[in-house]
Image (cartoon, rainbow, N blue to C red; front, top):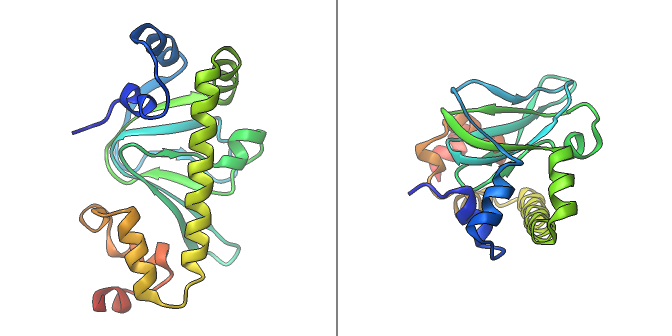
Amino acid sequence: MQETLKEHIGKVIQISHEEYLDIESYFTRVFYKKGKYLVEAGNTAPFEFYILRGLVVSWHMNEVGKNSIIQFAMEGDWISDIQAFNTGSSSFIDIKCHEDTELFFISYADKEKLCSISKKMEYFFRKKSIANSLLLQKRILTFMCPDKKARFDQFLLHYPKIQLRAPAKLITTYLGITRKTLSQM
């Protein structure tokens, strides 16, 4: 079952229906087709996205043309180029819908305004930021692990059904392994 934004927020803070309606007014709900870019490297990243339905992938292409998958975002996940969103600088990553995707987005200005008038939402976003930092730290530590099987097992703990939704090429790029290694696991 698809989780709503209200249910998602309600896992962290208690809000009334009226408070939620005010909170939701800062977000825009949209539907994007598979293949639509949410952020393109070189452009700004004016929005932060909450995924209601679908699969979104972020990656960075280095100077020699090698892609590195940074994040998969599915139902209940947030995604953006954190640096570009928070500083207004150009993005170094691409974020693209891998499936038809329904999401909410919020601009930096609206997020700041919402947090300034609602201590509850400021707390919510702080808790989400901490959770995201912990996931990124765990990803870095897992990626440093030379045991590819352990890396894959950690990956599946965080993305349990990803193999049904993402092609092997994306998974191997995320894990830094070959297709042959993946098929042996």
